[in-house]
Length: 369
Image (cartoon, one colour):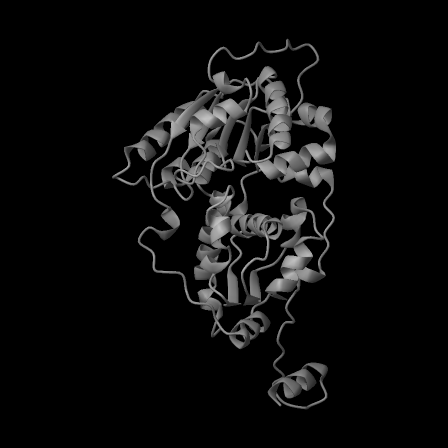
């Protein structure tokens, strides 16, 4: 009865004063974005969540001396990148090719998930004294997507005039992509580009849920001399002193909130997982363009590893863009099976749980608006 009346009100078939209309939610499943290559280049900046972060806004854990030390070292590293070797992203025709750096020209932030590595990496980008066009920031996946869109040589040309390249979440579980990006980084180092990176865990490298610095340096094949490992100890800051994640809401609550929230999307979780298989992960950011909140019904365990890895990428893009996630069904810490959480992609799944949990907290206020 209520739904029928609401539908008639929207169609204007029932006279009442005042007429209250609700926004029809968006649907991620209805979107199939196309992303031009130039947008991929233009978007290689810290994501919206990290627009305003700086070294000064990083709050070191007083019980973890490595965190304050990381701020000190990275601040000095940024200051040392003040010497320009390129103008407007292109070298002057009469400029000499810079000599290969003799000492470490890069830093590798080594630490578990949630210790603030991305905050520090973005702070380094902001602190480096160069115009934004001479600095690039992106995840490993975004970098490989750029190579796919532009081609290897064009990517070298595009990034070769940069002062700094920051790579977040260097994916070390695909040998082919690792070799590709290692070759790219070697060419960029030869051009005088400074590097900074964090990395993900290789299959079998479970340990602390991180990929050890020594293994990272070995995997990037010959570039280890250009990286200074910087260890950052600590616990996941997203849960430091915060309450437990809110319990899932009902389908009715989620649906009502979606209609009451301008710019919200509303999708059935299993249908969204199916749709993600039809959209290249490089487009997941565009998939969420202008979405103010994501509302999901019937959250249930992810059925297989391929689907799980796609969900990880979506969770990263939503977290980067600070899009709250309101859901019914199972809580997010039950998305992945025990086998997944104990396998080679363990770190990715725990990061996704951590980020989705943080976004679920952000969405709590949508209920009852």
